[in-house]
Image (cartoon, rainbow, N blue to C red):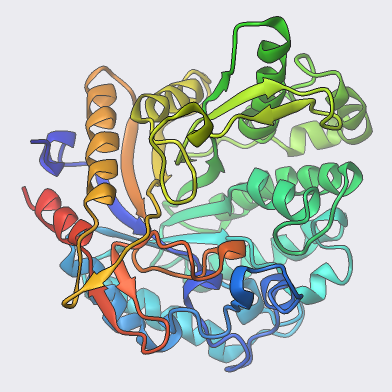
Length: 445
């Protein structure tokens, strides 16, 4: 049976959260509206019409929830700062109550002997900035830099661990191309503009933190999936390569000074020519201390001529009779390691950290308990695979489970439950699931 000590004394163990998904207090204490507040009010955008106005009420219950992190045995609490809680209009006047809240949260983490990891942008853009074009507008970079500089100066005396962006491909593709996440925009023009400005932001953010925070440990995080061709036919292989360019390479390669991955997909050539002047190519580059890997599943890709531009289609795990979670995501710990190895192959990456990994299941509460054996099995399999890869020389320095409590899971609303702790969204009662107790034992062995 594996145990945390097998990974070494310096390995970091944490649990990850996000402001928009847990905090609540969305319309009080001086906070401005975010794109998710606006998007969730649009009919049919969130399952069952759920809204994050209260969410997990973390804003009022943060002491109890931080105590749960400590009780479960984790050493790190990863949380994000709500941009619109600090700058209600995106920039300009600050909100003293929002600033004070994060001071209290940081103080509580330190009092509990937990190391805070702050994510600066976890998808909750101020609506005031979206009204000006959001991530499609070049002006977003000036506003983002003001926000990063403020947070670094305000909290950098006590917080040394920072993640600049959370999953830039996720929020640009789902929010600015497919329209299924906030702000609900569609089309390649919106997507490519958002991509470029987010790519600038991740490097700019790193440079600001390096200048403003003494002894900072700086990273950024990428959603990533091993891309597997459905068959070995040329058409499926090329389709898989196109998806890999988008999902796994679009943001990391400019960061490494390699530019956008145009060589493997000619559609990207026009985009790169339009955006990659010498000035921007240099600005896109930054040497992070670590890269955060956020992986849940692989994707199996089949050529499909009827899909615009990418001409590719996912073959779902259920259709291939593969084990999967309640979200339909394939369970494949070998693929988990393969995608980490893919990123480790970039010579300029200093180290890797798994900053999100977890699984949603249809949990049931019985006699004040949640017996989630499937989630325990998921963690056991993925951590065993990670340990073997680490023993084989893979430079992974930490692991953060997604997530502490069941929360507002974006377009899934409160229906998708990833937490180690069950949340009753009517009463806000917390129940530690069996998976939470499993981690408690694992981390203390």
